[in-house]
Image 1 (cartoon, rainbow, N blue to C red):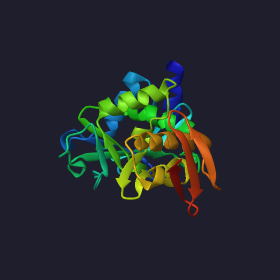
Image 2: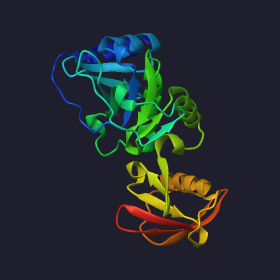
Image 3: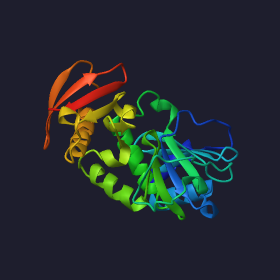
Image 4: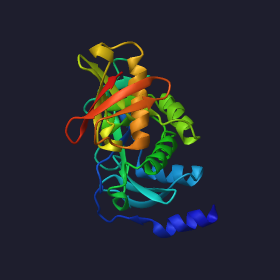
Length: 257
């Protein structure tokens, strides 16, 4: 560990102005009275030795965090200006009256060297591990995955992500969303990973209880196989056959057969 600390000490710079390079994709929501300061990030990095702090900009409340060879921008810590998340489209394992806008938001996003690669699963896995490490900060109330506008309890997120990090299945319910409409189940946030969103409709246009499982299995399949550019049928494990039809460059129609 001494070598790690020496490396981080050599890399760390403070006081120079720089902005967050890329759009943040994750957030941690804190009780406003417990919004973490940059010094608390450094203390957590020093005591837990999971990640390093390689850059600090106190005026902007920005820290560059280093984990497994990758850097991520962390914005919203004190003494910088507080951030807020306006709305969440879905709350998971949180009270129905949980108000995201009432909490202090600290965001995480890929660093500049990850431009164009932040959505790759190996990068997202490292980011998820960093989110788990930061969830040890006092006063945390929720964790948000911004591409899907999901807000989850820290305990629920830790369980879902922990299974994935140990070799389990992609945590579709933690990193993507499903919204039911009259057309079917619409994915939300899937485009971050594959560049497409889908609408999943049931056989003969009628949604069945099992179709939500089909929509989840389709999310897993697309994350594993990538976007679909032509009409095709795919067999989804534990569900059955689904017809996929692209509708424009960023959308996909799925129908159970």
